[in-house]
Image (cartoon, rainbow, N blue to C red; front, top):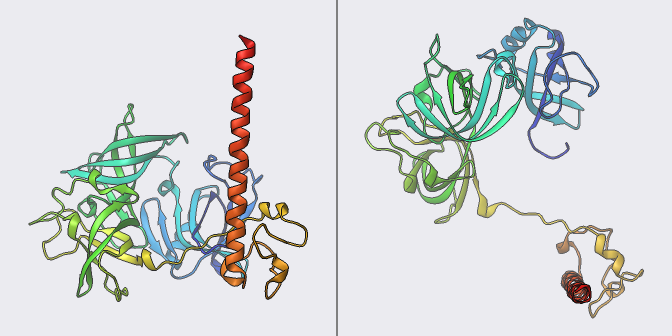
Length: 374
């Protein structure tokens, strides 16, 4: 929980305290049904602020307006919270709150996945996760989504926004969560509400111009770009994966090398967007080639060395300029980096050789047993 990452909390609503901007949930881990007042997993107070977004029964709110709407919900209403655990204050701070019918596993069936093609009001979603109103979970490769087929037109919202959207805003590549009524064969869903989610695209840098970058698109949410059919994405010309145009206004684009690998999170432009528009609006932009990596070596092998930390290599640890600190240790922090590296390589080579010998001996034994048994 101390890692710098977004956390998710789910469960039925217990109580709301508008005076201090908080509400409490009865925690339900993983896919446990969100119902009833059983508190075996405990409860947690959630802290909100003026920037917190709310999606309650398909309606969008922000700040105090959202908390006021939460106060109108019944106790034990299903709630999902996205936020961060503040270690310093020991508080769970919400950035996004979903409640009522906006929560998967509520009154409607729910599908999450990426749009790989669109024809009129029909979307094809790949990598679909289905959460039935009954609480069951099903994984399907592809599901067709029909928009504007129920008694009222499909409503559309977007993560991290209270703006108004419609079904034309949903385009190829966009990651979506769809609420509606699933057919008996689980191959088609009539959409009542669609929530557009942050989408991750990856590609290699081609060139930059004012407020935009062009990338050679290689994947969308980890799926190969060849799966996506961009027909109809542009009013004059369709999106070109080889020069995918990304709106990066407000983000730093300095110092990109040719073909640098980029990772971008944001939202796909509306279906059939104008020729002068971009294909994607970026919220974050990362040059993966400049992202530092971290390797942590565990200490299970250290017991194979002698008690004074002498190694298998030519120079014992005791002769280093300073004693080796407690393991695990970043290799670059030791003045004996080369010796440590050699020791580790020799150790694992020795272990690998030992395993090979054991497998060989076992195989010989098995063959001997086999001959004897005949």
